[in-house]
Length: 163
Image 1 (cartoon, rainbow, N blue to C red):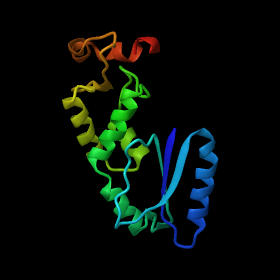
Image 2 (tube, one colour):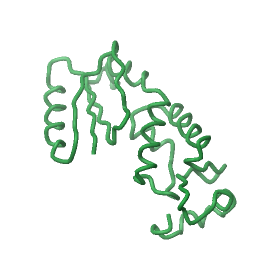
Image 3 (tube, one colour):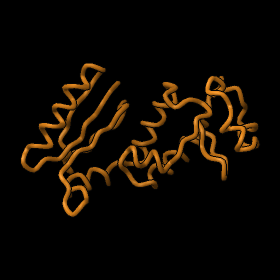
Image 4 (cartoon, rainbow, N blue to C red):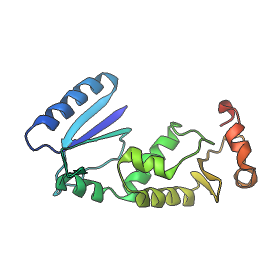
């Protein structure tokens, strides 16, 4: 697992915690702690787990972390989701909820929706109005048209091994 920890620290406490987390996670794969810097774009390509840490000011992230969060583009989110779909971490038929993805990535829902729409244009996910979004793979038990027309209850009740 490739983990990236992006942090901002005023007095060094958050930096020490970020380094300790990275040291612990190295037992499970690659882990790197990087200080957020508005002057440099941090690539999320190949990242499986993104952890953010910073001091808060008025219950909000500080300006450096806000700048980082604003720089995370829908393309970076697209690359992250695409990699997870191709590695089958997001299994065919498993529902993708943009709000949950946005919360887990620490971004607003707009770049997540853009990324999902881009994935749909590539044929990696199926977007069915009022039914949700699911990853699609050529080996999936259901064809795209069946997925778009099947009742929502069928999606929710299929055994995990069929997804």
